[in-house]
Each structure stands twice: as C-alpha cells, then as structure tokens.
Length: 246
Image (cartoon, rainbow, N blue to C red; front, side, top):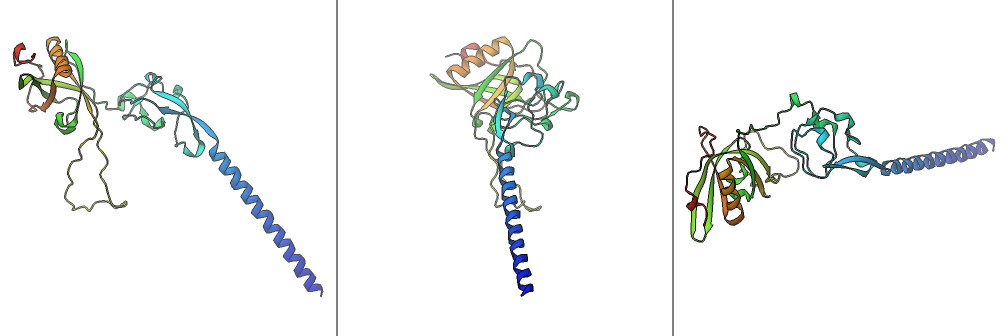
C-alpha cells in the first residue's frame, strides 16, 4: 500500500514538473518569437549606387527603415559614420540592406573608372539591349554610333571610335536550373542570356558631336556597334551635317 502511494505521488510530481517545463518552454518560445519580430532600424538602399561611390555621398541614396530583427542581415548598418573614407566595392541595388562588407578603402577597389579625354562632353543615351550589341558594351569600349532617320528613310554611321565611359542597366535574368544541382564539369556552355531592361550608355564626345548625338536621341533611332580593339579614341565625325539632320 505504501509503495502504491509513493508511486502515485511520484507520478503526480513528474506530471507537474513536466507541465512546468512545457509551460516554461512555450513562454520562452513566445518571447523569442516576439524578440525576432521587434522592429530594428537599418539603412536600406533607395536608389541605385554604382561601384566606387564614396560612403559620404550616400546620404540621398539610403534611408533608415524598420525591419523585423529576424530579417536583418549580419553586418547591416544603421549609420554611415563608421564608413568614413571608404567606397562601395560593388553596385548597390534598390531594396538591399546596407552592409559593412560592401565597403573598402579606395586603394583596394577596382572601380573600373574610365579616364575622360580632355575637352570631351559626356552624353547618356537610353537604348534597348538589341541596339547596344545585346547589352555587351562595357566602359572603356570604343563604339560606332549609327543613326536611323525615317523621313527620308536612311541609316548612317554618324560617329566613329567613340569612347564608352559608363553603362547602367540591362540586367540579365539568372539562368534557370533544376533544383540546386551544379552543371557537370564537361557540360557544354549554355547560350548567353539576353538582358531584359533598357541600357543607359554614356559616351565621351566633342561638343559638335554631342549636339548630333542629342538630336539623334530625340528625333531618330540610335544603334551602337563595337569597334576593333586597335581603334583610337578620337570621337571623329565621319559624315556631313546634312547626313545627320533631316
């Protein structure tokens, strides 16, 4: 009889202890969940930022945004104060959190900056990828500028050996893969993926050619061609004014 009573008491104690442990765990889980949902202020990119941009010039391109604590990435920044003297090591896209790992000393960052010839103007044109050699034009390339007019219908190589100083946009979609499987080592290379967005190309041109380029962008259709690597960067106009203006 005594053993039965002891066994019953022990069972009751274990049941109570188990219930306390369960309640404690549930309460802790609730607290952890609530802590993860607490809003945290982090800097989020609001405008595209090119590689090599100094941190002290990011004031208008980032904003403090409240995010759940669980959504904040490691190294996310809440202020630019700790980035003095540093530049971005890569392009920053709208919506991404500002991470300390994206910055470094300018001496170790290859910004890909192109030296602008003296006396040249920089003019940007927004083009479809098909008119920018499939989006393959890069800063430092030399291009020919073709202008197509509709009345009268004609196309002319208007500018030759023009230096590209910057290229923005034209993001290509990521190739589709089945699951997470990596391609076999001996698999043939897949086709290039065409960019889906418009491409903004900035060209270095002399003042007269800048006028012609702006006119063509406003009233005609502009196409770019890649020039040979041994071409020179003289921005020469090879046709007469009558062949550019309608």
